[in-house]
Structure formats: structure tokens, C-alpha cells
Length: 220
Image 1 (tube, rainbow, N blue to C red):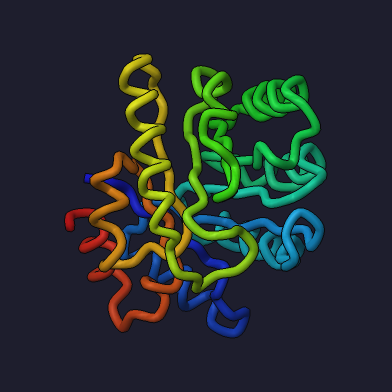
Image 2: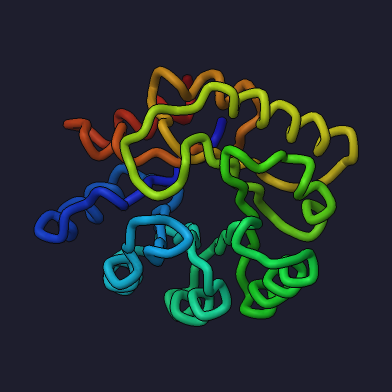
């Protein structure tokens, strides 16, 4: 059975309290926090996500899964570490070189948080193989990052399969997370490819019953 990390990207401020509590009672495994700076990706959600995570921390004990789509990774870590996230994931593409990747990995660990590394659809998965023994999660973007409600890029399924094969062959302890276009129709293939954590937003938040969709995503 996989875990479900619900993206709160599309939650409107006027519905936030109700939606957060519904996700809490629906027992999502994580709140997935899409932090965008308007530079690394076009959309800017930075202040909104700071506000949302601060509020969630006050009303919920569920873990926070922070996905940084930003250029200034260290500043974002400093800004979000106060909400005591379970995971902070940064983008490989936002780093200038390998030294910076290792520096960010260590910096997150120093802040007592699990580390995730993420790749965009156009990045070859082999580029991050050397970092996998040092992180807890590899987040494969199954859409181009920057907005919700996109259709899953089916070629990313092969990317996840390749990643899973490498992890198994090299006996690396790491979870695979997939993010983008994941719903009841696309989840089975993503899971079969080797994913441990499914990020889903639109499919859950547009449903009448959040728990029903979350439960189905776990078991289908």
C-alpha cells in the first residue's frame, strides 16, 4: 500500500479551514506544500504556503511534505523549517553544481528533517543517481512543475521504472514519490512502476468525499 500526500495548492483561502480539517479527518498521510517563487517556476505561492503551513501546524499533527520549487533553496529552508516539516524536497535543477546539491542535502539534515531531491520531466534520471544514497526520497515530477490540474506525462512511468530498477539493484533505501496528474485512472500504473508516495491535489479536492478518494488511491 502506498501513502498519499495531498497537495493543497488549489485550496482557496476562504475554504482553507474547512478543507484542512476535512483532509485531517480523511487521514491523508501528508499535506503536500507546493512552494513556488515565481522564478524557478512561473507561479508564486510562497507567501500563501507560509501562511497555510503555519495554520496547519496549529490545527493538525499530520506531517508536512514541503516541495521547494525555488531558486534560493537555503532561504526557503530557513523560512519553512519553523513549521517542523517531515520532508523538505528541493529541485536538482535549482543547484549550480554537485557541490551545492550535497550542501543542500546536508543543510536539510542538520535541521532534523528528511531530505527529498526532485527532477523535472526533461531531466534524465541518471543525473541524480549519485545522490540517492544520501537522501530519503526521490520526487519524480510527472508534469512540468508550476501549476496544478495538469495531465500526467505517460513517459514518466518509464522514468519511475528505471529509477526503481536502479534502487533495487543497488540496494538503496529510498522512497519514490510521484507528483502531477495523479488520479484514480493514472495511479495504478504509477504505483506499479514503483512509487511509494502519490501526490494528488485536484483529484482529491474536487471530490465530494476526500476520504473515499484517498483510500482508493492507496489500494487500487
